[in-house]
Image (cartoon, rainbow, N blue to C red; front, top):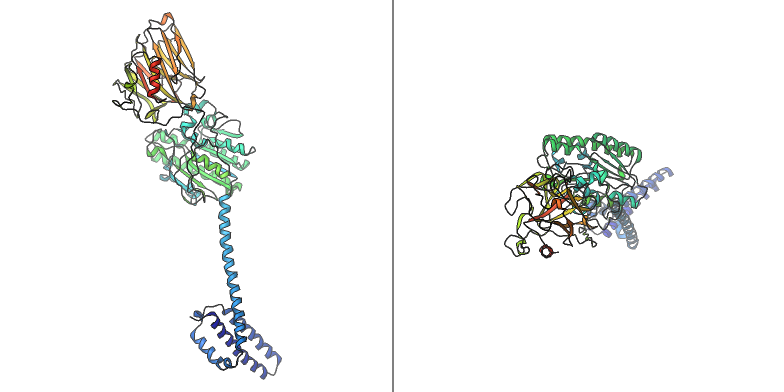
Length: 633
């Protein structure tokens, strides 16, 4: 291949020959006009050839080269060699400059693209909306959802986001809003229905964190399941709360709010999909049809942001709290535990989101605004959601002010050195470890009532009694002494639900026993015979709602007293009145855990219970020490 320099030499030779011809024509011409015209054509031809000098020699035809060399051969011999080389070098420098300019333009374009990517990654949103569809799980992908498909066509999505265990609304929405698991926030359906979320909690909602960073932030929470606004979203943080009994009304209220307020943060909860699941079954045509209906509402809300002119600055999120199995939920089957999470926004990476849990939604919201999350949160921003953002190690928070944190370990097996029989000599009459069932190790008949949820306990699994209770059949204590020990984990209760009882707790004078957990931060023991009653309240430690506590109740009929110990501490003693000393405690011939003897007491036990043991006799201080050793305390 020819070099650039030799090519330039050939081009200049051609120019030189052309000029000779033109000069001859000009001399023979009789008019200045002809000379002027030819000169102009010469300049034009020269410019054209000069432009072609940047073309590769491979692009010049052999015929053209032959013609140029033939016409210029004699002229080359008489030409000034140094002049030609000087002209060629000058033209080569011009070509280099043009090449540099083109390279610079490409570099500038690449730099602009990189700068835009950096700008996107550092962008903070002005608006965020989180739409939650209760009970939808990940069944969006089995339903007709044209609006969701359109909104998230270029967004990030996952159908494998893990929700909370148990998959119950309060536990799940609490995790989504507060960035921690349900074991930490302690919320249950019973609690959030009546008890406002404490404003001084270590685990604030993302609403509160936003309000702390922006005191003028316009925020709204719109829910069809009103307990969210009662017991999950704090009061006093400038959040507009709207509750309704219909998803259509929720949609209209949100659209109006967006059009008039242009809010910074909005949370929406639609509830009717969950209702369809309970009534017609989850993962059924009726369930899918309701999801399609809600998809229409989601489309209207999206359009409200568009019409307001704030969509480009909005992170738009749609998700769920849990799915379902059959006509219920609370377990951890695939249909219950997997939910969809989808996000759309200018910094969102198109594709599939990496490993994610429902609590991570809280981190996503704060990241969108550029706010740091509380050190108490254990949520994180997942990979594959925001451009340039990779999930870091999941935060771990250990409450150093509480000794109640406990990592679940397996229940010691019978016959092993760690079994309870090697620690306490008093025989067990009933022992329910609740390791996935309600079987009594001692072989007595038990029964399940309502819905039970098995989650991590102190040993193995424990049973959550929000929506059900357990019965020990054919229980007749008569005048016998006995001791009941149990682990309890609660975030607090409303009213005075029952830990264990064989009586009608509507009236304390009724015959039988009851131990209740009360919202006055104590446990209360009651014993009555129909006309006489006696009661004992034992205050609980101030941190009892932060983890597991152990409650031991000794009913000593020989000494006519009841002794209660919390967390293996000193006994609080109740002396039985004379009228009750010889009273038979038989009432309903049943001992219920999580309910009174009737099974219909109107206060649900918002707690997880584990290791229920009823000893056939009394335990003393030495036995309490042995129990403490058994549980590794």
